[in-house]
Each structure stands twice: as structure tokens, then as C-alpha cells.
Amino acid sequence: MRLVINKKNVELKIIEFFFILCFFAGIFSFLSYLVDNQYIKLWKELYVILMCILFFDIKLKNININVLFFLLIGGGFFFIEMIYSLLMNIPNDIILYQLKNDLLLFLFAICIYLFFIKIDDKVIRDFSIKLIKIMIFLGAVNAIAMILEFVFFEQFLNLIGLDMGNWGTAVGVKIITFGDFLRPIGLQSGFVQATTLVLMAFIILNENMVYNIKNKIIKYLLETIFLVAILLSTYATAIIGLIVYFIIKFIYKIFKINTFIFFSVILFIFFLYTTHGLGVYEFVNTIYPDKAYSSILLRVLQHWQIIDEISQNGIYFLLGVGLGINGMFGLDKELYGIIPIATDSTYIYLFSNYGIVSILFYIFILIYFIINFYKRDILGIKYCLFYVLVIDFFFNNTLTNFPFNFILLLLINLSLKIKQKF
Image (cartoon, rainbow, N blue to C red; front, top):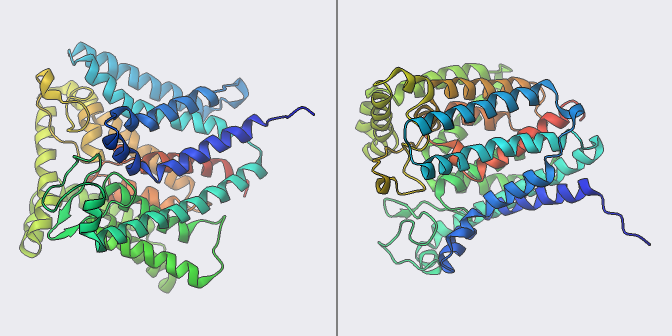
């Protein structure tokens, strides 16, 4: 008897396996340190490239106007930026490293979309249920790991080979304390990645329409685990996002008033002002000076520096100062004679690398998706998109926040497929 293998089922398994691996990203970073092999850190790049090669089966009937728009506009824009950066004599290594970060996300989004639109409705529904279950379960595993790391701080440091007072990124993961307490990383490479992932799992647990945990005790227990982990992280951006989410839900439950759009506009304007002036910083500094300095003042100064650099030339405003010129991660740019400025928010990351054009496009596409899922949000990602655009945009860099960035893109494309079919 000949064994017949369903190619699409194999491809779904590949996506599912990648999805699972994302929840253990920090382990790969730590493993690269243990075996002294930096190439292990490139696992996601190699995996995504393999997925693109296997899945990028383009047929004319699958090229609708949306796909064509993203391919032409997105691909064309990356090409223009690459030529522009070469003309500015930016070293090839820096340009390629920057494209490795951003172009990979773009290709992943297109590839996954083209693949999902070929899948049968019943198969995609079952696959969605499976991914949501994985998201909730492995999100809880990461949350429990965060709680244990916080409680058993010294034991955790000993486990990864660090001593009290000797931490940072020396072991492949980023260990940071707030006062005398650890900012737990779960199974991720840092507390920002871990907390954002747990917040996403909490939102999807409560908002998705494909998988409902009927046992109330289990659901309340999961919610409690997620909330405790987020609070223990002391990650202000995630905590603010959580508070705003509760306020919106509370107002709707009591008064039947949907304040989603109102909060989106007000908070976006407020955080824009917060990260471009000193008014909010001065107020918070009188109450909570440590948090005012680390969360607000450093962002304001960082934004001022890059905006001042951009204002020196009109073309900088449109297309940025060049690929990879700013940003403290990746290559040691000082070896190339470049002294970079940190780009710790999505807003300034886009402005520096790609100019105002990219910011407007980014905001437009997020608003498009929010509107698309506003009334029918099958997988529960509307509030995740709200968090990315309104809460996180001026304070942290979603585009480099792995695995949150890839998981969100995956769920967006999955939602586009099942929205009309569920």
C-alpha cells in the first residue's frame, strides 16, 4: 500500500512546531551560550526562510488585490531603502543585518497569508483551535516559570550560572533587576518578551471565540497565573495595557458603552506628548523617580536625539537616516565608525531606519486590521493590536520583540482567513 502524504497537513505541522518553539526562545539563547555557538540564535531566521521556501507556492488565482498591494508596495519600499542606504555609504554588513530583521517579518507575513488562503475552511478552523490551546497552555507555562524565577531568585541565578550582582546578557539571556527583585524572563530571552507574551495569552484566553474553557475554576486559575506574572515583572507598559483593557471591559459591562475608539485616540495623543516633552516626566518624577527616569526620560532624550539628527536633512524626514545607522542591538557599529543611538520604541525605530513614510504606513495598516476585526474578532487579537498601536508604540519596539512579533503576524493572517468562515 502506498503511503500518501498530504502536503498541506505537513506544512501546518511545520507552522505548529514553529509556534511551539517560539515559547521557548530563551532556551535557545541560553543553549547558544552553553555550547558557545552563536549560530543557534539564528534558529528562527533559518526556520522562517525554510518555511518561505516550502510555502511560497504562488498561483495567479491567489494573488488578490491585498496581496499584490503588500508585495509591490512593501517590496518596492525595502528596495528603495536599500539603494538609498547604499548611496549614503552605509556598510553592507549593517544594511544586510537590518534587512534580516525587518524583511524577514515582511516575507513571513506574505508567505503565511498565501498559504492560509489555500487551506479548507474546516481544516483552518481546527488548526485555529489547536493554536489557541497551545497559546494558552504554553503562555501559562511561561507565566509559571516567571513566578518561580521571582520567588527563587538566587536559585535561578545559580541554575543559569550567575551570582548575585553579576548579571546582564553574559549567559545569552537578559537578566535585569528592579530594586532587589528579579524582573522574571520565563522561558524567553528577557522580561519584556516574556511579559508581552503572557499578556497576549491572557487577552486571547478571554477574547477568542474558538476555544472556551468551560471549567470556571481552571479559567480563573489561568487568569490568576497570568496576572501575577505580569505584575511581578513590574513592566509598566504591559501593566498599563492590562489596566486599560480592564477599564474598557468594565465600562462596557456596566454602562454598555464601547470606549475602545475613545481610549485609542486619547492614549495615542497622551503617549505622543509623554515621549516628546518633559511635562509628564516631571509629574511622575515627584511620585516615582526611578520609573520616571527609566520609562519616560530616557525615551524622551532618545527621541529628541534622533529627531534632531533627522531634522538636518529633508530626505532624512521622508526615508530615515539609513538602514541600521541607529540601534544598539546586533553588530558592533563602532567598528564601522558609527556611534548609534538606541531605538527602543517602534516609533523611533521606524523613523530612524525608514522615515515618516514607514510610520504612516505602519499606523495605517494597524488601523486597517483593528477596523477589520472590530466587530468580529474570532481569535481575540483586536486588543493585542490596540496594545501594539496605542500602548507600546512610543515605549517599546514591537518589531524586534520576538516571539511576539511573529506570533501576532501568524494570528492576524489566520484571523483574516477564518473571519468570514466561522
